[in-house]
Length: 393
Image (cartoon, rainbow, N blue to C red; front, top):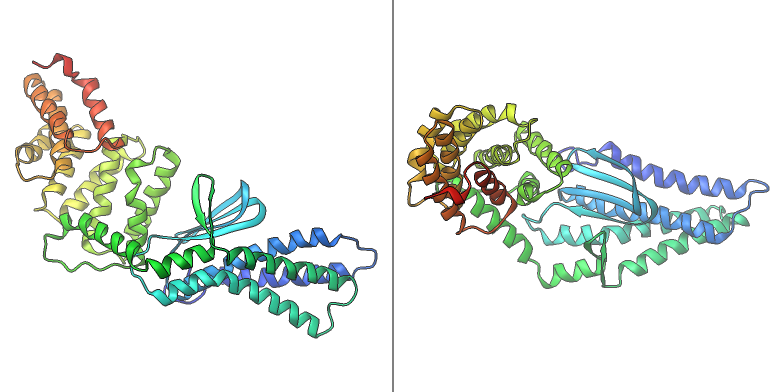
């Protein structure tokens, strides 16, 4: 959450100021005549303050170290409020006594900054303790104020103790690790995850790079890697809509390489072909034109353009692009499957039933070389609905 050059944005300063303000309000309320609140309740207030400042500590070091943050979650239980700031989502939940900061996938690994990012939460709680010590130094902890601020300080110690114990737990079906467990993982396996992510990213972009481009990875690459790795697997339409909008925002920026832009546009076209979402259909022609303009000689993009033309009802034009690709022997299995499937749909729409059945059969044969992922199963279901296998000769 930076302005693009490692500087903290105004919203980060706002969170810092809010934490300080809450502490001062707590001190003022404790000084009011007749005000009563058991210290145990102030302990819960301290836990809420500590959780916010703990996550703020992670966030500050992420901003300084240019670590792209995907999600900041404060609290547990039902969701109260959710908003997006840039490409970072902020969630507030009912009980504000836990939380986490989730970065986008690791790609460019700088060990020192990742260690500081993990330790940043504890440093945030230490900062609260230092502020309480300063209040004590100026005489703000006498009487009830001392009990209140003492409870808040004790809450910071509790959070620090929990953070430095290495263990894992599952929250809403997702494994969560304490800061100590994350630190141990970084120290024991410092290169595994970034290396795997870079290898996967390079492999996916290789089909668009023509083999003569030196691929680079940036924070934008981290976001694209996260969005595209599960785009076609998201069964929830709201989740897919969020990913689609995030990818469109990336396209509006200037940080994408040519290969990344091709991958994103190609993924959007493929999603539109598979989901057949009425909201996406009007944009298929534009997206497929854009991506083909970037790589007019790349077979994958020719296939995407041909399939988009078939989906939009331009069957002859789509067939002209898909026919030579469907018989190519060196095409990747997924490309072969999609080319043959949409060529079958084009032939059927043109009244060529025998050719349509032939290409539908060929698509089913190509599908055997693929894992049964939702994207393939959706296209197969469409083929089976329009050209049932039982009718094939």
